[in-house]
Amino acid sequence: MSIPDQNSSPGAAPLRVACIGGGPGGLFSAIALAHTVPGSTIDVFERNSESDVFGFGVVFSDATLDNVDRVDPVLRDALAEHGRHWDTIEVRSKGVSTSAGGNGMSAVHRRVLLGALQDRATELGARLHFSTTVDVDALDAGGGYDLIVAADGANSASRERFVDELGHSVDEAAVKFIWFGTTFQFDGLTFLHKQSEHGNFAVHAYPIGSGLSTFIVETDEATWRRAGLDGFDMSTPPGQSDLVSQRYLEELFADQTGCHKLVANNSRWANFRTRRTRRWHARAAQGTPVVVLGDAVHTAHFSVGSGTKMAMEDAAVLAQTVADHRGDLDAALAAFEDIRRPQVAKIQDSAMPSLSWWDHFGEYYRALEPWQFGFHFFSRAISAEKMRVRDPRFVSDAERAWNTQHGATPLDTPLAIGAVTLGSRLLQITEFSNDSLHFSDGTTSVVAETSTGEPDVAAIFTAPDADRTSLDVVTRTELDELCAQKPVAVAVRGGTALSRVLCAEHIRFTHRIPVIVVDQPTSLRARRAVDERDCAATLILSGRADAVAFEPTADAHPRVLTSAEVAK
Picture (cartoon, rainbow, N blue to C red):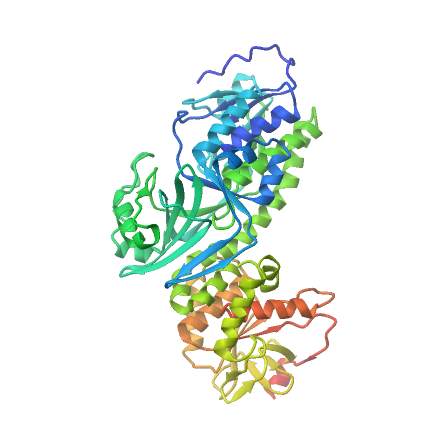
């Protein structure tokens, strides 16, 4: 590798920057730094040729557009001229369509976006070097740069160079996904669900302009193998696509795409990997500061956000902190991390229940009616009342479907637990201990205990205190053994919001036993009844729970029973 001649004497430019990776993260870093630190010398190195573009569409929320547009209008201009915008998301299940509005999003073909970013970076003075493989050590040893920006993607060699120092971890999802395009024009983000003789398949589809729509397919591994889609040689170099899967999926979803063909582009099955990194910058051997951004240090499942948008937001903040701490790159990179890491963590945390939903979508498809399946999907990370702000009709339709089936609102629907019928599904805990819980609807009570076997006494199960997208084998076994004792109901407490729901769903969908979810209080200092009602209604309306109670807060005073008192 040879480092390009800087064509300037040391110190002539405010900064000499090398960007490794010519994707949106590297290119927008060049654009943003050109704005915030005028006169900088910026080189962007991309190992692929200029014509190589893997993937199809990239999606941006309206909020992201505002964040990026404050730096440069290149993204908004590309979307306005070549992209597509929508407000409504649609879910199709068993011939029924459910839709919810208030979700402003835009998408554009990755090739179009890269072209626009390349043109803008060049216009601002950046030098783009395609078919050029570089590494941190060579750039550092050459002594030509003040800062190295590593934006070389999820399989980043730059990150691996400092992997022990940075503290990188990877969690792999259970389901398989494969990325295609299609010439069928979807109106907006559309989720298709179908069951073949081999199992369940789901599609994320959305228009991207350029006469195409993105078409991402997911399925569980057992279905993938039964369908004979596991024969592609994954050691094949990038570029070749899995044509067997392409033909299978074209036929399966032909009625949803008007028999339009799928378009392949390096299309092959994979498991989504969520990447987290404790530290995002380091120094190379000769002292050059190196900052890693985008997919190289963090990923979030594509159902909640785009790696492209997070990388571009990283670049915008990096450029601003470099400008704010002119002459002190260590302070600039520390500030960059301080700002972006909490923002990225928030996205990744919100992605966890969504990623979990996709790990279980086949189970939900089989267990839930289409209207409830749609509500379950949209409520995976947002409550009913927050959805009502976006689209009142959508929530009202779900409530109407429940009322038609049950003759009452979700919280006022009676619930039979053994010989007892509760008149409300939002319960109060009147007495509690480690071994016993007493639930009341105001007039009728139900007792749950850790030891089961007595008639009309519910069981207690403590959920694992860890957020995973699926229950581990030990937890599932414990639940199965508990349910084999045929308790009249199970109260699920402890753990996390996600682990409680996963336990409750396993009990409800696998064993058909009523579940009371014991949720965390909305505030340690003040419990707001409206929040608790919203939370409870969402869990019940979506089919995640049969009833809900909340742990008492410090300012509440139900009588606490000791284990000895319970034994008496």
